[in-house]
Image 1: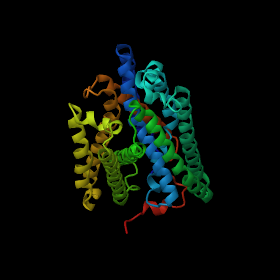
Image 2: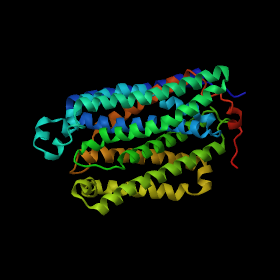
Image 3: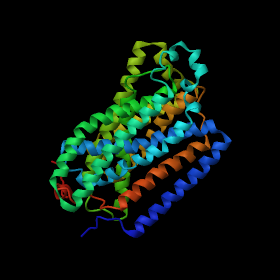
Image 4: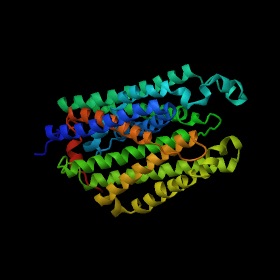
Length: 392
């Protein structure tokens, strides 16, 4: 019978690799702080938002599966639960952003606000105490839902009590709404206000779609690595990968829809305070990055994943998942750095250091959490049906 626990050897090997990656990243990143502390915070914010997107996407996925009562996803749900449980660490790792507010956000400078009539009118919302209070609220909401859903799922492994499934479904109905609202606001607070004169009502949804996409791509790659190492090789079959491929295709299309809707409304309105966001992103060295997002983030994946066979071809699905993770990083970089460097793209070695430090830390947290429990929710009464799931 297939084991549903991580072997000690596998756990230690992956844990050590992730620890080395995170450690090297933090050493380089902290050294970079003393070289250029402004760039430190810029690189940190970029990669923090990238790493956070996986946890937010995972929380969305878990609640969506509970609310829909889906059977196909039960066998992979514990992996998603492990990823969403990195949110407490995300809260701790948010502290450097609070410490670097003056390096990131011009609205934190009293002299700048005093000489800017528009920013002066926004001080009721854009002020440091309220910014910090909102961040605490966001994380409190996310961590609350994550802990409740994780706790019920783990308890169900022991007693197979259906009431946990029912409670998870009811909590997720409210939780999805709360997550959508709070993450939309967080995206505006932490990224959109880097350009405080600019605003877009689509921005939060745009980043939310990117989070769902990045998580789905990461889930596919994790499952594929498990398969390659004989973990859950029989439990997660081609039908599950097909559905994950559908999710990847759907959220990439939804991301493109949000991106186009935002651009179209701003282009049609042609208001200076709105067009500034795109104006410099289609000039200089930012222009090819913008074109890359259009072609590489949408048209290429759409053209490939629209076919049914592509979503069932595991090697191709892996390539597309990895490709979209790379494109999501370009997108986050474009959003954050594009608001901080109008003159053009300015790559820096601290970008890589922050990526290794943050993704390594999130990955290590996920791996340790996952290893403590069964890596599938064996107590869910739909588990056996999920094992034998077949497309209709």
